[in-house]
Length: 511
Image (tube, rainbow, N blue to C red; front, side, top):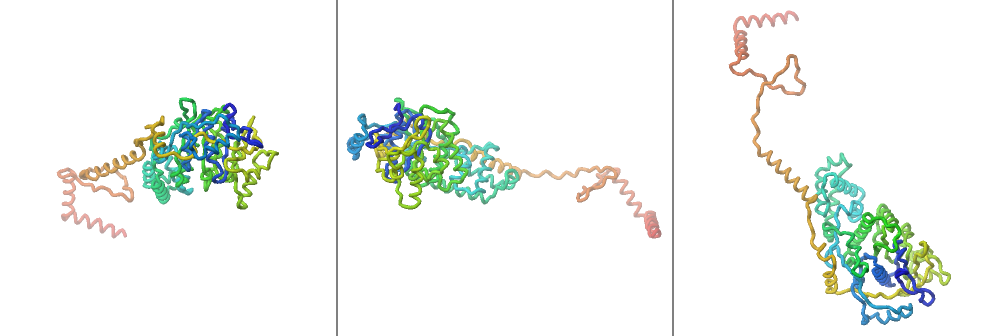
C-alpha cells in the first residue's frame, strides 16, 4: 500500500509489480478496451485497491457484475485455479479472498438505497440535456428557474416544475416583457418531455431527502473506503438519464468539496462506466462543462476514471487530462478502428522492448498495456501488464445477498421514505385558490345603489371632450326651483311672447 494500488505484474516475464501511486491517483485515468477483454476485472481490482487504501469509490454497475465486491471470492469458484496460476506468474504469495464495505444505490429504489436530488440542484443546463430540449425551450426553462428564485418558489420535484411552467404559460404575455419571449408552444413541449421522463421512472430521481455527498465518502471501522455501487442495469435503458445523473454527481462534488491541493491520496474516486454516453450528442456547452470539471476537480481530491471501449470515445481535450491509463485489447476491424488504434498507441511513452501499437492489438484477456504517472507527475514508460486477480467475488450476487447487504448498511432508513415539503406546487396552488375565492366573493357581493350627488362646476369651466356631464337639477322645494318655475310662467304669458318675438326679430333684422 505504501507504493500505491497494486495492478499486476509487468516486464518480460510479468514479475515486475506495477502500481498506481496514491499520490497521483487523483490525476484521473482511462480504462479502455473491446468487449470481453477484462475491463470489468480491472475496474474491480482498482476499487479493491482504493478501498484498502482508505479511499471511498463510486461506480455504476452496468452489468451487475460489480456487486460481487460485497462478497469474498471462494476456492470453489470456477476461476479459482486460473487465479492461482496467475498469482504464481506475478509472484503473489499473500493472496486471500475477502469482501469490501459496500453500499448499494438505485435511482429506482429497488436494488439499493434511493438516490434523489432536487430540480433546483440539477439546474437548467443538465435538465435541458436530460430532456433533449431545443435552444428556445432551454431558454424558457431558464426563465422558469429565474422565476423560482425571484418569486420564492422552491423547485424540488417534477410536480413543482410542472406547476411553475403552467403558471408561466398562463402569464406568458407579462413575462415576455420582462425576460423575452415565453412561447406557450415551448412550454407545452417541455411539459411533454417531462411526461416522457416520468413514464421512464425518472420522476423518482427528483425529490427529498436529497443525497448528501458525505454519505458517499465514508470509511468502515477498519479504515477501508466505502465502495458505492449504483445499480445501472435498468438505468441503462435510459442512457440520457444515466449520463446526466452521473454528470450531476460529478458537478456537485466539484461545487461542494473544498480545495485540498495535492493530497497524499484521493478523497474519492469516481468511475464513469460507458463513458461514451456522456458525450454522444452532447452540446458544446455540456462538453465544456465536463472538461472544466475534469480539469479542476482533482484539486478537490477527486479522481475521475472513464471506462469505455475506445479512447476515441473521449473528446481530445478531456483525454489529454487522463494521466493513468489501462488499455486492454483493441480490435482493428475497420479503417476507423485502425486509425483509433494508431492514435491510442501514440499517447503512450514508448518502451523499447516492444511496439506499443502491436501490443495493444495482441494483448490477451486479463492483460493490458498500462502507463501510470510517476515522480513529479511524469507518465511512466508503457508496460505489458498481467492484471492481478480480484479478492472479492467475480460476478453478481443473489437477491438475498443483496438484501442482506442493504439491511446491514450504515445508511439504512435515511433515504427510504420520500418527503414532500411545501414548495412551488403547493404555493402556486394556494395562489390559484385564493384568487378564485376573491373572484367568487366579488361576484356574490351586491352592488351599492348609484348615488346622484350634485356635481359642482366652477364658473366658465368647460366639460372635457368625450366625457359625460352629470345632469344638474334642483332639489324639490328649493329657491332655485321656485325661481325657475316663475320665469317659465312669465315666458309663457303675453309679455313673454312679445319679448321672445322682439329678440328673434332683432336677430333676423341684423342679418
